[in-house]
Image (cartoon, rainbow over all chains, first blue to last red):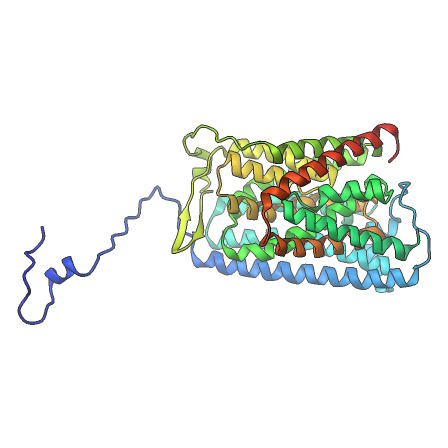
Amino acid sequence: MSEPDTPAEGPAVGPALTQQNTPVEVVVIDVHDPPIRPPVEERMQRVISLVLLCGVLASAALVVLGGALYVFRHATVTTDYEVFRGTPTELRTFRGVMAAAFRLSGRGMIQLGLMLLVGVQVVRVFLTGILFALERDRIFVGISGIVLALLMFGIIKGILWRQ
Amino acid sequence: MSVIIFTLCVLVGSILAGIVGALTGLGGGVILVPMLVLLFKVNVHYAVGASLMSVIATSSGATVAYLREGYTNLRVGMFLQVAAAAGALVGAFIAARIHARELTILFGITLLFSAWLSLRRKRQSAAGSPDKLAHRLRLSGSYPVSGGRQEYQIYNSSGAFALMLGAGTLSGLLGIGSGSVKVLAMDQMMRLPYKVSTTTSNFMIGITAAVSAALYISLGYIDPGLTMPVMLGVLTGAMIGARLLMKTRATSLRVLFSVVILVLAIEMIYSGLTGRF
């Protein structure tokens, strides 16, 4: 029911003004609507991005450095990638790669950078799981856990297990 | 070839592959592996390993670029990732047992499929009711539009989950990101808005690839001397390609490169069959 549009006398305050001049926005929240994403998700996404960026940069730095060492030292050696012989055993495990990198082997450093790249993905999944925990989304903390387990299975079987 | 010449040539080739991959949205791996196998005479196992590593790098880079924009749907990504990661384990398992020759042929067939995927007209399937599973898991989300956020609904999440198993297996087996399959599942089956599909797919790819990459390292498929120029080249190329993408029309490129992929596919299958791998 609206009031008649007559100019009010004196200060124009009160329901008449509210009804006709100020638009009122009504927000209805339905319990069946999808949840509105809270700002904590945005902050965590920024953290994840930052960690990813640092990881990729660190990995690339190792690869570039190791690559430079490798190319300078073996510049004129002939390469043969046609036959599959498999990368030397030392460069297949984390232990071996750390040892090689520490004695400044070019290929060791490259391999370490590559393993770091893989490791960063683990951190990524872990942080996403934290994000879900902060949102109290238990189902997705669980789901992230499953993905993490699958990742860790691949990594442990791959580079952490004693061959 | 000497190390230095080889490294430089692979670097240049990888940059090109990265640019093409970013421009077409097909990912670098699809161009990269045939290039390494056919042009540089690299054994397909090494090629697939190097490609897989470069896929992780570009996916991480892309995620850094897109995550903060607010399009990525982490829940859909993580949910599908369960299937993709499981598939990646299966893929790596098969890769350990498959002969290089069969792998080359399989790669060629996948290229054909990939070309068909990008060329076909998009069918809008009949509208169904929103997915109950998606509702239970609260998968639906919103993406930024001018003046706020636009909500969207999710359909057919179990179908997409099943498709992800296949995508993950392909990723683990062929060293590709399977980005096109992932986007297909999200865009066509789950009816996510396009930018949400692509950014979420980018988010997932690196994790899927990491699962099989670790296994590849243990199998000796990752050679540092080869992977180094590949990873650096594709990463650089992808950054260049992403910039170029802003300025070019993607549709005409997609048709052109589908033709290129067709040619590559035939060559891969041919060399696999004749034993020249």
